[in-house]
Image (cartoon, rainbow, N blue to C red):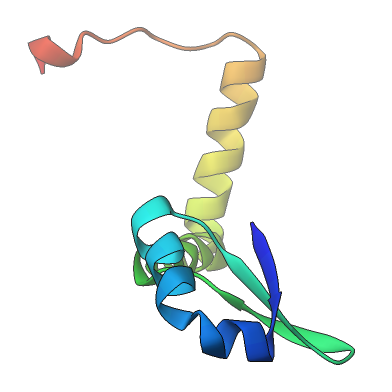
Length: 83
């Protein structure tokens, strides 16, 4: 994660955009007592997808059940090539 000021970001925008897009980095842009975070579109879409999944009680319940099964070692190994 990189941190910068608005003026430095403005001066070096291409460098920061390249770091975000090509290196999967994120940039915190400070502006007084607040700021913003620059992330790639791919990262943003991933976050929004996760948010949508977790907003579904059914999906969240399935995930919790799966995690509990793993914690209790109640898992079944599957050969992906056999699918």
